[in-house]
Image (tube, rainbow, N blue to C red; front, side, top):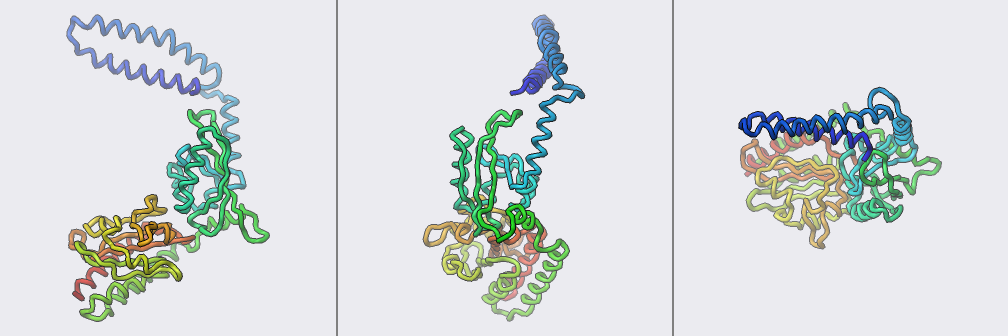
Length: 377
């Protein structure tokens, strides 16, 4: 701990003790002598301890407007960290991001403000998270530098070399871990940092995404209005067909509330669609919560791999489907009305995560789907 931090703690403790002395003014008159002795003791502490400590810090340039060489050095190192051409992150022993440089934000597709305070493992495939946490903890314990291959959720098929080294920032009480991310494969003639910068650009502009949502809502409305009257079984399939591909990689519909049954599952080519279709909705915590009238759920890089249960082989569905973001929405005609079913959407691979605007649009469409189900019952 630095001298400035120690002085700050001493001063904070003194302020708390003064507050206690002020509250002691209401004690009986016979006890005021003890309070007075305590006040004199605190005044002596200021004169003999805090005042000299303040003068020493001021003389060293740690207080006031003076510029210390250490502070200039920290500014220089911070600028170098941000401008490094390689993706670099500073994490703690639990892999929680402390800082992310510019190249890392482009490479991972995550803003520094969003990443800070969140585990770096949240941006990796589930299969790599345990190994990364273990190696990070080992480096933080002082067991030497490590290196391992991981895969980002936005680029699941591109291996990334993560190099971990211990770092003890001068103002930090604990050892941190510096993580350097280096893609192992990239197009011929392209440098890794160029690929990172190219990946930072979104696929579609904001205005285009809004127009796409409008077109999606229009297609859903037309599909539901033209569904055969009285054919309840046709509604989930028709609604899922509108959302599949153009909006979500996976579309799953579970009908009912108390006794649910899975009626529709659409997924990518070659995906374990049959396994997900055979899964019991009661084994999916997200679906069960939504069927009970819960609020819509939006998760980006889901932390719990069992949030959607496991398939017949015992593997978590979110891991097998390589889910990077999901929406789970109850199908209800009104907020406090009965639930007709649950609609779940997955996105995987390098596709952009669901946004709040998209979640709101699906919430509106879910009410329309619920109305169509009730009308066809």
